[in-house]
Image (cartoon, rainbow, N blue to C red):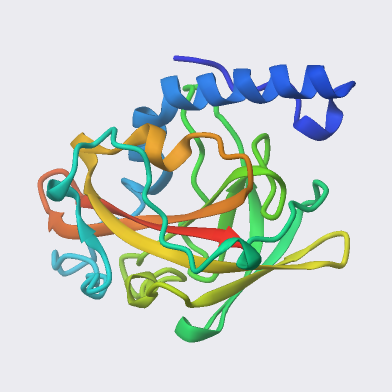
Length: 238
C-alpha cells in the first residue's frame, strides 16, 4: 500500500518540483484508489437497532450506467465551452460546502491516511459533515479535489443523502479559508460497482480545477453491512 504524500503542492519549491510532486501524487492515487474507494465511503453505515438497512439514497436519474463503458475509460465531462472554465485558484483549505439544490450547508473536516494505509472517514456520528483529503488538491486548486460524505447513518439520512439528485449544470460552492468562494458546475454523475471502481477516471490528475463528490449508493448488503456502489459527482471550477 502506498503511503500518503509527504507534502502538499503548496509546500513544494520551483515549478519543475511542483510538476514532479503532482506526478508522484497522481501515481500514489492510482495505486491506492481501489482501497481508498472502499474505505472512503464504505463501512460507515451500520445497521439500525431493529436490523433494517439504512436509508437508501435516491435513484441517480442523471447518472450514466457504469456498465456502458469500461471501468478505466477516461472521463467524458460535458461542458458548454471553455468560457465556463475558470483559471485555478491558489491552494486554500476548504471551510464550508454549499449545495443549494439539495440543501447542503456543511463544514469540512480534514481526512488523512491512517496507519492502516487507508483514508480515514469523517466521524460517523455527525450527519452534517463532509471531509476532504487534506494532503491532496484543495477545492479550486488545479487538479482533482476529493470530497466525501456519508449517505446516511444507522438512524437518519446524512449530508449526501440527496447527492444523486444533482444533474448536469447544477452549481455548488466551496467557501475557502482565504475568503474566496469557489463555484463548481456539475458535469455528470455516475454510480459504480465498488469492485469495478474506475480509479483513474475518478482520482486521476487534471490540468484544470475539478472536484469529485463521493458517497455510497446502490443496494445495501446486510451481510457485508455496506452499499454495493459508489456515487461520484464530477464537477469543474467556473
